[in-house]
Length: 268
Image (cartoon, rainbow, N blue to C red; front, side, top):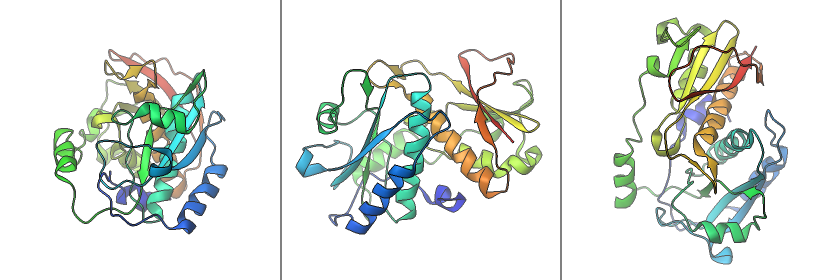
């Protein structure tokens, strides 16, 4: 996957009746085994047949196949899951398949039974995979409108120069412009866009602006999953533009806005 894949992706909730080609399932299965994350936390993914495993989501039309993931509860697990699952979903998009993040509206018990979630494990989200229908369902159109799926916050509300007192303008983003743009257009739960990034020389600090109600016992902090997605988008774009780096957790201890938490730093 690359910048083109990230630009091409969109959430798909309405699918054709065509089954996913077996060779694509094989490619996705192989890619699952290659995945890792900056925290080296094991994430287990499975591909489920909707009829065989009796799994479904009421917000989808025509979904026949799902990818589901789980992990052991531990620090940074939500970040690791978001990072890996987004890369897996981008791989699916690169193969011509439609996907969408679903963390809430599903038959959760059925999915948890299907992948045998044990004590101490979490299954935070799923995605259908399939071929996007030419026409969205009325339900999908209403959902996209309700969460303003095609809109994003202004660049200067998401990204900052050295500290939170200096909003970063696109014209001043320099070599980090494309990676920051790919973060800005990343998917997030109900399009809340909880990421805030501070560019500090060769280091980019990631923060979570917390929204009440998104940290739940059964699935953890959904907005940390969103930060994992943002990490994946930034790293893919940075690598493609010749800016290879690594994620470290080295809190610069900046003065923070209310309800804001340090997450990680991308270091060149």
